[in-house]
Length: 166
Length: 168
Image (cartoon, rainbow over all chains, first blue to last red; front, side, top):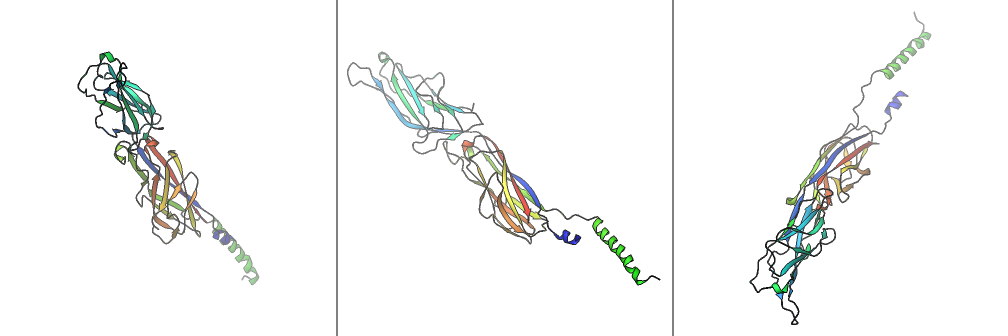
């Protein structure tokens, strides 16, 4: 009987483990779909007596890839290199698609301080197709027609900065 | 001179003593069933250099380990056959990430191994992975990670893979 018991098998089990891991570090990458210069001019009114207006350009997209630490977001700031010609101002709107930040709406840029144009950018990527990214709209606005003077083009560099995550 | 009828009286105690010795003799336990593996998979570090292109692009979504990232060994089997299940317990993970495992070879040894030749997802629940007979050594395992994206955010992502061997 003993031998019979000894010959019976009992299900046994064993276990082992290992780890799968990887690391994702912060990424901040930003570029324009097209970095060529655009020209905005004042436009004479169609009807005498009306004030001149300014041109608008909406041809560029801001592309970015961001990886943020948990719970943090980034912002895109814009700043002009010089002041707008006298009598005018430069307005800008950056329109990201859903999930790639929040537009700050129409913002007037200046050369003294950076202006936030996109806020609350999570870890995301815009893509790089022709119309991927946040559409940038620049508008030259005539503020005071009486101050306008005829002049050569005033080169203005717009610097767009993707901030550290905060 | 002993009579023949006394012989059972002598032999019976001897049988009892012999059986007792068999029962109570110190027994060297057999080596327990063993499942071991060597290796692990660190899929690496992902940053701006791992983007597929310029600003606006993402990481490559699918990452694959070497074909023998982990070598599994089954030893000290005593029964007819065995099977192995696999599951994972996440330490820091993301719902968009999926881990897969497959067997890329048969290993060495006199035993057999079956199943596991195509990628199967490792989930939080034990799922059948391999089956076989007898001892096998160095069964090569390969892993795949899908769903990798910048949207998972920065951090160290880690999951522990559990293999459970059961004999039957």
